[in-house]
Amino acid sequence: MTDETQTHEKLAGGFARLRSTLRLLYHSQAPAARRFQIAVLIVDLAIIAFFVATPLLRENPSFLWIDYSIAALLGLDFIARALASTDVLRWLRQLPVIVDVFILLTLLAPTIFFNLGFLRILRLWTLSRSANVWRPLRQRGLGGYQDTIQAVINLLVFLFVVTGFVYTAFAHGDSGIAGYIDALYFTVATVTTTGFGDIVLPGTWGKLASIVIMIIGISLFVRLAQSVFRPNKVHFPCPQCGLQKHDPDAVHCKACGHVLNIPDQGHL
Image (cartoon, rainbow, N blue to C red):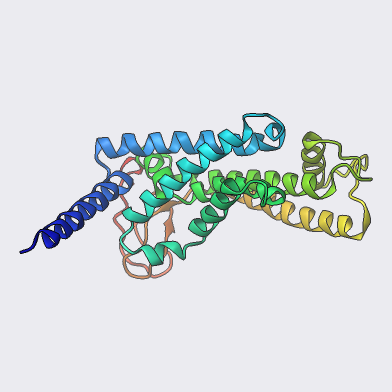
C-alpha cells in the first residue's frame, strides 16, 4: 500500500467521522447534542433579530461587517447541516433549504440583492420547520401547541416580508411612507382590514398589492384563530393509515380504527 493510498484512506476516514459527529450533534438526543442544538437555536434567533432590524441599521458604518459575519456563520451552519444529512441531494431539494441558500446569497452580496433583503426574515419560517425546534417542546408536553405557534410565526413572517416589500417598493413616493415604521403601520392596518386611509399605496400596482395583502392576511388570521380555538391534537402517525394527528386521549384512529398507543405528552 503506497503512502498516497494511506493518506487518501485517512482523509476518507476522517471525513466519515466528521459527518458522523455532525449527524449526532444535529439529530441526536444526547445531552451534549441538546446543548449544541440549543446554542444553534439561540444564534439563529439573534440572527433573525438582526434581519428584522436590518432596514433601520443599513446606514450604520458597521452594517456590512455584521452582515458578512452572519453570512460566515450561516455558511458554516449550512455546510455542517449538509454533511450531517444522509442524502445531500435530497436535502438540497427541500424548500426550507432552498430559502436558506437564497438568504445566504443576500448576505454575501448585499448590494446586488439590496431590494430583496427583506426576504431574509424567511429564515424564521425555515427555522420553524426544523425538528430541533419542536422536539424539545414535545418532550416538555407542549407539542399540542405546535400548530398555534406555527400559525403565529407564519403571520409574523408575512407581516415583516410585506413590510419590507412596501418599504422597498413604495417608500419616498406619493404613498406617505417615509420610513420603515410607516410601512409596518400600513401593513398591519391593511392586513387587519382596518384601512385608516392615511397611507395609501399609489397607482394600480399599489391597489393590487393592497388587495393581495388583505386576502392573504385574512387567511392567516383565520388559520391562527382555528389553531387557537380548536381542540389540541398530538402528532402521532397512525401505523396503519398514516393519519398524523389525534386527540391526546385517542384509543383508536379516527380514519381507520386502528388501535393506537399514544405516549404521554411528556414522552412525545
